Length: 281
Image 1: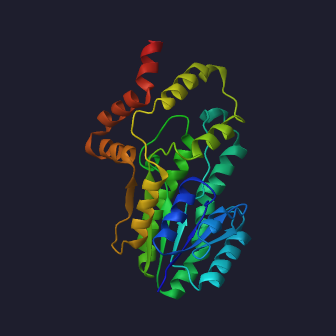
Image 2: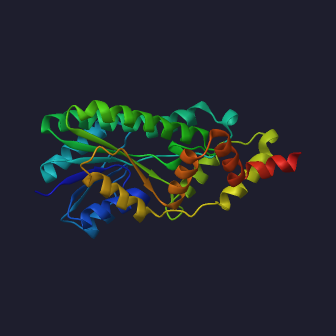
Image 3: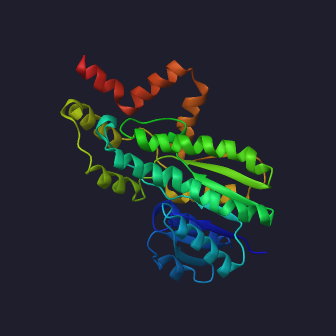
């Protein structure tokens, strides 16, 4: 029996690559996005069905699930990939921007899970795959709200993994590192233009932005991450977390093999924080 996956945020980047990966592996794919773009359908019209889904609009979630089932007969896995970010100074970030990030990255994920869970429960099986990030277990400056949303989904997913196991529903976490081959970074930069930088932070912000441009780790690409999403969907074990990319693997090693004090100092050095502090001394 051919399996079917529904993926949010499929128009570009990791979502796009993941849709192609599943289709190439013989799965049916319900590729969802806020505005339907038929490029994916054109690549594989037999396997890929494109429909609209905005995770901040519950009616579109229900409609996309229904449309996917109508097209392919069932849904076996859901990949929560849609997400947004902003680079900003914490104290200067407007509350409406903060709420927008949480609406998409946290409440949107929750809405999709709540919509699909009754279907999976009645079906007797299903897999929920949530895309977080290596900042879901580490943190970066200037990304405090994005980091907070990813930490929230990490905790939510671990708790749900126990709860939904009782209904034969699996929960998986994919933790990619930075994927500079996607347009996520450029979208983040664009969104950040709307947030002003207080003069007191200007020197720090400029320094840390320059440090980000010289990222100290080898990045993943979306295809490596898509491979991990597919592996998670096919893994019947109780494994929860799947690292994706060299930088994710390295930051996980640093996080979990060092003392807290050593880890924090290591990250200060790698992220450029120590260099800025030394410059101010």
